[in-house]
Image (cartoon, rainbow, N blue to C red):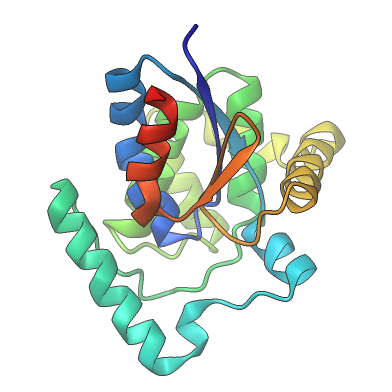
Length: 195
């Protein structure tokens, strides 16, 4: 029986972007199912007392360079967003709405590209609308859905569940209740899916 991998991600995490570019390929190679779990990295950081590596100048500089190295290894575009960090609450609520509406992939493709390739200010509602419209998505409908209480509650529940299961950042993966963290641990994810 094929395994599944729960993929907890936040658009504000450049490591989530890099993992997103690879997780589908890993799933295809292993026959695994990806269970998409949008959550709020800010909520996880606050709950665990974790802090962004960017807050430590030497580590932040190294991390940005390392993300570039991984992007080259993966053969994907990557540009550090000049507006980082960005409050992703509306974007992550939009991901829940997109998941409920069965269009998460085109939504995530558009948001990740805007964030980590095009360097757009995705905290600006006008820019969000332009990005969604440019991806042939119904921007007004998605933006309205971000105010739906059920959407808000699902995002909170995903974040709380991730915290309770031990997550402390993004991306986080669970395979058979074993947690893996970071885009640089995808080899462990693939190994677990083929075990």
